[in-house]
Image (cartoon, rainbow over all chains, first blue to last red; front, side, top):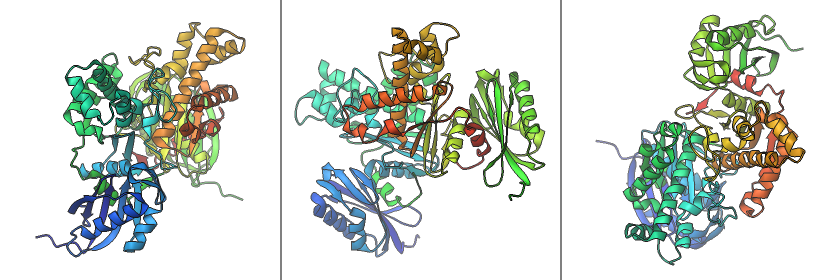
Length: 301
Length: 301
């Protein structure tokens, strides 16, 4: 029989529509998990977070610390440009710390998910997590610590340009990885409002030539990101997540095929065995919330 | 008056023709430096290293530890595929440790140079060092520690492909950064045996259209590498070194011009101010030897 924890660390993954909240005991095990709705705007977000924490069944344990992952920039506890939350700027760590009187850490949700995916493995070594969502970004964990970078911008590989003849990017460059594999860019190129990458993959399966081309670009962009992460960081694990990654095996096999195709002429690339190393994070994984609860661990600047 | 150290750490940068050797005191200050010739082959390399250490004037101090940077792969103290040294495989750490009976660390010279360049700064935060030599690779220091990766391959960004219509690479891919900015690839494309990148830059200055195109490619490849490192790692410092970098200000200004050109349409890229942040490591810098002496510090796997 395990004794109930006397204090827990809370982690929240705050998305545009849902909050995923977990409580961790001292050993880092998830002892409670609850999903709830997100309300938009600065006040709405703070209220939603408060409610999510209060409604999490932590069995009477005190709250020792809170970590929050957000879809946007987070530096020094301040959230900026979180379009999906309707937040332009919000001192979120201060706001939540005032409510619960405990330390609060805030980080970009992709970085939090990388930390969580690492903890869900054996918790050793390194991991790069590629997020294929509305945009494209990565989270990097080296030697168990999150690589944040000087401006908190480490992992912004969606805006590495890989094709001078590629599509124009919203960032102003041409041929960024995000123009090939980012959900928003791919949907815009498809030109049917409301269709997501899933509908495009369905149309490709049905033989639509334009959809087949876009599906190839998604795989090409994701494969470029995987190669880049493998070469720059040489991590133990390469994990793919995000809304686009909800396609699961359909996406994994397309990326693996593209990795095989692109290494057909390169013994060097083949020696990295990337096609068999890519893991998809299950869409129900608590990685982002779990990683948020671990944000007070060591980071690499 | 500073007392002479009782023990020193030795660092060696072993190049194809020269060894740069330094001795560091406890505070990490260089108390001796000496350059000597490298002899090729496994036995020649070990003998050259022994002589370099014995001839370094360390004022009677004992040798506490030895670190060696080599132009090739180095993992677990074993050097592989060091073409410039005439070495296919050599258990270098064991060989030198037997001679001096102290711990010996061996690492790729680009990684050692990154650690040294970091120490030559204020020794805090992060740094990415781009080596433009025969090939192209980077060394990454995050939070003061060297990023090595699972297979010691972190930083191999020369083989990130950035142009599907680019030149074929010796690695079997197309449009790798190295095909644009690596000395061997650029010289091969120039087609005049014996000419280095310096002669190509000279010909470009004299108006040769082919040389102007190659000079543009060098800048384009180097700029792509700088953007990639800035986005993936977000380091405090971006430093360029290597044989090609011996061109100094001629190369720095070409890279800075290309970084400005490529960010002209991108407010996002302009916000990173990469064009003014690139530093050239002086060609006489002891960074690689100094970094080799620091190899026993913490690394990130």
